[in-house]
Amino acid sequence: MSTEVKVPTLGESVSEATIAKWFKNVGDAVRADEPLVELETDKVTVEVNAPSAGTLSEIVAAVGATVEVGAVLCLIGAAGAAAAKPAATAAPAPAPAPAKAAPAAAAAPAVMPSAKKIAADTGVDTAAIAGTGKDGRVTKGDVLAAGSAPAAAAPKPAAPSGPRAKADLEERVKMTRLRKTIAGRLKEAQNTAAMLTTFNEVDMTALFDLRNQYKDQFEKRHGTKLGFMSFFVKASVAALKDWPAVNAEIDGEDLVYKKYYDIGVAVGTPQGLVVPVLRGADALSFAGVEQGIANLGKKARDGKLSMEDLMGGTFTISNGGVYGSLMSTPILNTPQSGILGMHKVQQRPMVMPDGSIKARPMMYLALSYDHRIIDGREAVSFLVRVKECIEDPQRILLEM
Image 1 (cartoon, rainbow, N blue to C red):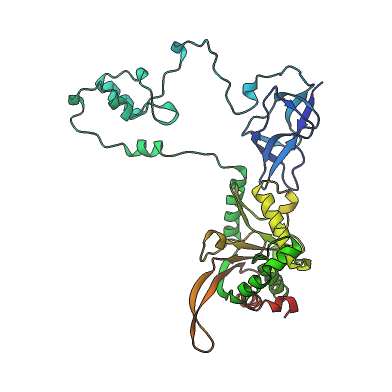
Image 2: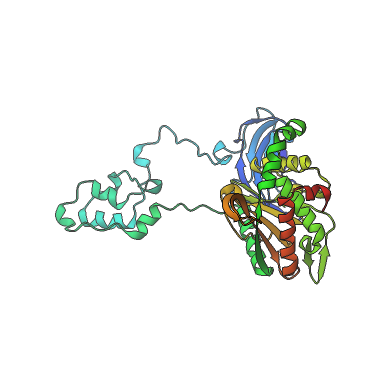
């Protein structure tokens, strides 16, 4: 008797997924709880494990297929049971060609249009040419290199065909479900919110000095490194408490002011940008913030984020500075009304209060906000509050 493996519940508002990868082929032995297939949803990738040990007897949904919650993915039979379908259908890897296949049975190579014309003009047999183009296609250069065309056939060397050259250098890849979702959400933010960005700059000297003084003791005591993100998270929470509109959202004709502080931290992954949420940031210690961000970042890079990790969030912080960005205008993570953009720290000459000029480690800050709910005064004041907390970190501890 076979066991059906079905698409599990994927989370609130997520009803379907795409088959991203099969880890097993038909006929392979599987262990209980061993990963069988990777599903890609709008927000996360999910591994589906084997409910019992046995043999993978049939794969119902191939790579690239869209499947709904509850749909059958594959069948697991008793250990050693014969496979219901050949292994070639189980995974994207093609089955090897039979050794007895005669050379004459091989399909004729595909020929590019420009190559066909030259071959017709010069009498070259394209079937005898090994193509060097994409997927083994015979190109114009292959025909000319065959050496059978007389010089008179082409008195003037033809310039490489623009469209053909571009086609050979292009690769068409289907967008992943996550990438399509990211594109849709960013465009939705631009289309629905009255987005505006305000800028300021912050002197990182005091924060650098504080971090250098305590980073070794901090790591020894808490088992995590003391970075800059914990200070910016804490500074943002302090500013959100002072300017609650930045922590609010629009719901129809209502304004929803949130008195909790779940901070989204944007993380770049090979699959795209994700924003896991650090919950209850106001109640966390600096060590708690650093540990929470480190754990979420690792889960994001390993593709282990759950739907719960990505749900909700009242405000987002994006650190483009880790990639070298000097200044940017971040796009809102809807339905949130504000996002803080951090940037690269760079030494710049600054005029000090006494009139002297000194090189200081400066960072540009950007706050993108929804002008429908946040006025300019609130946005600018929010950013000034963050600046004050970073330039004088004791303010965070003293709540001043």
